[in-house]
Amino acid sequence: MKKSTKTVLGIICVATTALTFYTWDAQKSTLQASSHREAPLIANDPLADNTDLYVFRSPDDTNKVTIIANYVPLQLPQGGPNYASFGENIRYEIHIENGSTLTPSAGDDITYRFTFSKVNQDTTTFFNIRLNKENLKTTYLAEKSVNGGPFTTIVSSGVVPPSNIGPRSIGSAAGLTLTPNYATLMSNAITNATGAGGEKIFCGPVDDPFFVDLGGIFDLGQTRAGSTGPNSAPRDGVGHKNCHTIAIQVPISTLQQSGLAVSSATNILDSRFIIGVWASASRPTTRTLSTTGANPNDVGTYVQVSRIGMPLTNEAIIPIGSKDLWNSRTPYNEIKWQENYFCNPELALYLGNNAFGSAVPALSTSLRTQTASLQAFNFANGQGGLFSLLSSTAVVGTALDPALFGNYLLRANKPRSVDILPIFHTGVPNLPPYQLATGKGGNPLAAGKPFINNFLPTFGDMLRLNMAVPVTPRNHPNFSTLGLVQAAVLGLTSPTYSTIGLQWIPNMDGFPNGRRLEDDVTRIELQAVGGVVLAAIGLWYDDYTAGGPNPVTPQLLATLGYSTGIQTNDTLFKTSFPYCQTPWSGYANHSGQ
Image 1 (cartoon, one colour):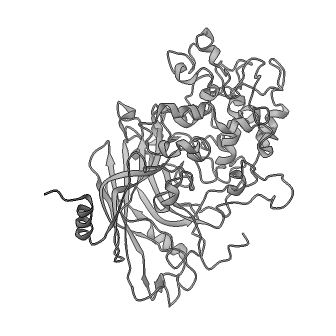
Image 2 (tube, helix red, strand yellow):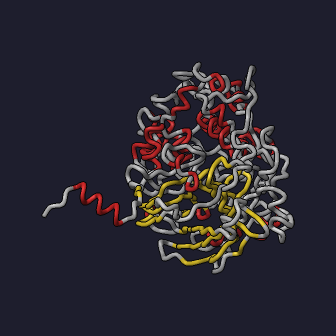
Image 3 (cartoon, helix red, strand yellow):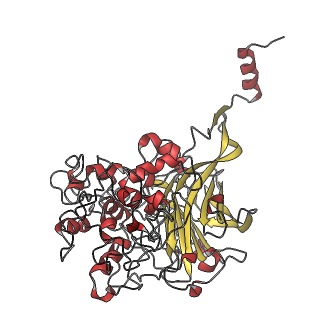
């Protein structure tokens, strides 16, 4: 006898004690975030939301690289009684591509995986910490896979410090009586991994190191530097807010494709020392919720729900209709047509001399795109850029040669395929034209002064770092939050760095060659959309006449002088691992930041 649909559903409900199901759909509900609440679906799942990723050569231990992957955005320090934390049944992963496999698109060369567990030590209180007991006390398991092999444990029961609730909870007789201050909690939580990798690990809450005027930028791009009137002062939208970090300090020899120490590098741009890094979070496909208040039951294969490589990719380049689709991929299976968003970036439309240049005064006043560079090349959206050179003899031997990467970098009506696309999707090789205009004699396709090489032939969004590039000391007189942009300025203008050959320039280790905590990535990326990279290699702004004596024109200076108004973090960084500052205390005053 056939049972009706209604009867079958009733049986199912009885059998599951009225449990409610929902499922992560791998095509529709999967998303991968690249910063703070930047994609529609991941905004509803903050525990799995990547906020930022940093990769830099450690300033106080230069034989090592530090990777910092942050999650759980925009935490209010005073957000009790249940404070933000890592989530259970989530796989937090850091992925590394170092070129050691013959097929770079095959997948990770190294993967670090973290899973977290929580327990309530005193269920009789509503307080998070009382009498040396923690509720939501969190520990983690850290595992490592090399070249797609099985995961092995490198930390079996790592300690996650609790939230920085306040002075009574941290360090008083009524709270954590054995801990004098929060800095000690952080220090005690740093763990040396087992095995031959030599990793050092910290997992826990920290000050969110990102800094940006979120309120201004997302009000149709109106950053507030130089503005007047009510609410015109720039404000750090993540100021006095915390996030959760997974920080790993790894010997360069562990990350390098053949196990070489950095002392083996042939020069400071040695391509054998380039790595690509991205981070993600994954959840089981199905969660079952209980009507009795019991914890949800998560089952099924894990589905990636969050990721990040380059900062602001999903926030400021991918349009909202494609964010979740972009987020459903990895750098190894990027969707080809989504490269169009890098070749004709939307933000370029709002710069001074472009289609909607008057629509966003904060951008159009200082930023513009070259539309008549050297009186020959137009890089406005939909224009030719350098495409006319694709079949010419002028590009032979350069990165634009069709025998090398010309068919990827030079595309019809996609002018920024020559600069924005490689910055985000391949890294930049040490080949003409991607060398400074110094020594080029006015020909942007000629060989110039080398200053970057982080090319890694995995065509997808990663944060790429050449580990051979020396560290710029944080107290160096030329240290700059403008990263590689400032290195280019010094290489073009400073007598100290005026030689044609390869030499170290301060900030060559800055974004987009990796990303330091101090780097002002919002400003750098907006300047890049405004053509500053094109200018650095000799494709100067429109107010320069080809053959003229001085390419440092008002348009170039305006682009270099552009600022969002928020140029540094709201607190200092630590001078040693994990470098992120202690999380803001919930007891402190945050309303008057």
